[in-house]
Image (cartoon, rainbow over all chains, first blue to last red; front, side, top):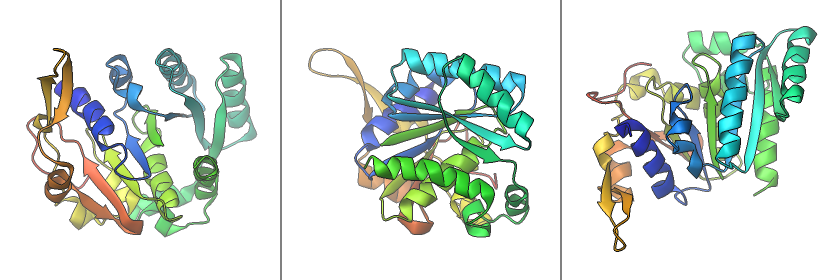
Length: 144
Length: 113
């Protein structure tokens, strides 16, 4: 097993209980799932964009994560510009029984905040993208 | 709850992770953020300045060691205590968030991301 995957997985286990929650930004791709990093996760948010390759990748991640029995498994639609974008993701996810926890619209605030090297939440806390992510925060807080 | 964000590169998973961490932390929840991505940008989306981001020490993989427990099973153990880990590698983000960044092999400190 790659040292990197092993270390992340081990750390997530060791540091559980350090805070109330841990939020881990996982490596892109599926390798960490095959290697079992994700076994030590309670909630996995799979970010998908409204184009086929992203949805396909999201579906494969969902299948693997389902096999790993991650308790809370959700897709997050991102960069949604139009109603057609939204429908494309919703239709795909419905076909594959993937629940969507929130839909984040395409948001210029994110581009602008990155350009200015300011955290998106500090740049504009009421931006549409921030409100959409707020639904996930509420979901987590409601479950303690 | 142990939350993980996954997705293709450029999908926005880092923005999601950083923002979600900040939102939970702003509600007085103690949050640990872990950057497990070899292109560490989580610090910036959490609100750590570019300058401070450049000073974060990556955690080397040697921090986790494979050891055999009493039953002979191989288990991962931390090579240093939690407090040592945070002292050496932890970074502070707004709203009291602690951040640690996993390094990739042969890397020293995080770049500007």
